[in-house]
Image (cartoon, rainbow, N blue to C red; front, side, top):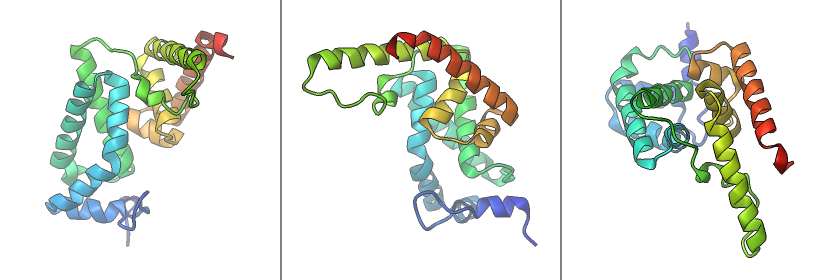
Length: 195
């Protein structure tokens, strides 16, 4: 008889034939190659999220490394109450919050929003407007409370479901919805000149 954790672990992998559950079971047995595949699968998104929270690439790398070290050490105790992806993002979030306790938060970096602004190469006026738009968005996001900012980034940049965001941040789904609504409302007000 399968437990709910086994069912979660055997969910199809997002970008390959090997499931998260298969990789997780192998990594739990000490298979470093399987853990490297987990890192390859989720590392880029986790790094992007860490960089959005801490601002500096070096700091984001440190946060990511600490999260993966913690994941490796805690694989045996991972119960599967959430997906592997959600658990890993929660580890990044916790390490980033630890980082914030030591240092002041910094604005979100422009690369996170590279797809937000259409390609304007060759048009100097539109390039200047795009830079100004990104600067305003970065400032608006930096002014949001941490939970609203994290919810917005996980939803709008990382594409996570409300359930996964809740599990990542340790919030009920209703709270995630409320945080997103307040964050979006604040961003809409602060970005109103761009409508």
